[in-house]
Length: 89
Length: 335
Image (tube, rainbow over all chains, first blue to last red; front, top):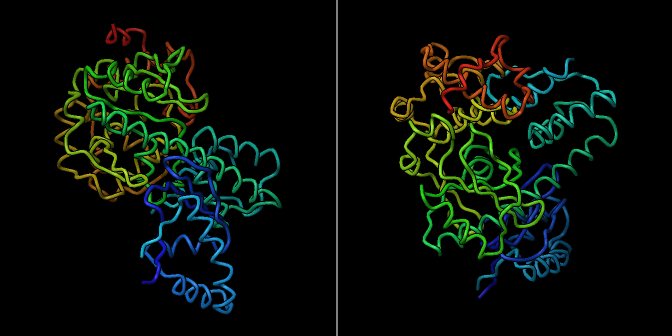
């Protein structure tokens, strides 16, 4: 079964003109996503597989899917570790 | 371009039909700083960020970045407040105390298209009549402490219990949305009818109904000290937002004896932003004529605010028609 990523349910957030600010409601640090992070957060409004996210970003930014995927994995890991995104099987 | 016009344009930015004008050239350093200060004082930081991001207002090097950073800081503070709000609402619920979120967070999430447009600086909660002390006890148990000196002690405001989490995080607990004579005509129990709800981090929070939110917003504009410009914007957001049902509003306003408050609040907001009277509600507000009793009531609240502050504040000098000073006699309503 493929893993799907989505926004954490217990996350407070705000989108400003140049960033998305994320704060876990229960505990944790404030995180600021900028640049491509804004699109990532927008995409994660609905559960998405890594490949789906990579395909979308690849088409948007004109970068190969492999490159996007290799950039995305550590970011998604970090966001997951901070409780800002959730994984569903 | 006069500062007043600039601030009003900022406050009206994005409203359909509003007269919004910004200079073509970037502001000089002094004018820019005055605008930044006014935006902060009137809680227009979100709108300033939007104006700058949309390039509706020309900026010099560094100004855009400064606005973005400041706005991000302000929103970070709002998120911290919201995290506290989620926890406090949970504590109160476990203590069996119903709660409605007033003003800032509920306004930002229910009445603005993007909550980033509407900063706020504290948390205001409404609890049922007679439950303020119990709510305070529950909040103290969850880690808050009572403020040494309550912030809100003006006679025109509802009595509040002020608690603090940290120095920068303040929570005010109310049993009513207004103090003074109108607290007697607006039944506190009816504030709980048909509440709205919004979600924060998976927690559903309740707020006043759209009609009651508009009444409360109009109270903030028309009684007490001079309103911040964001309070006028709140009125317009509520009216244009489509959630307020006119029939219910008229009925509620009549029942609560606040028709003049609503009419004056809406009219003041409409006139401040030079909005066209294309809505039944704005037309009604323009045509409404306050009675002598209404005028005495406004005078009484204004006098109470003057007595507390000693001077008119913020934008009242800017926005109210000349000759609106309160009479000493009007203060009798509060005694």
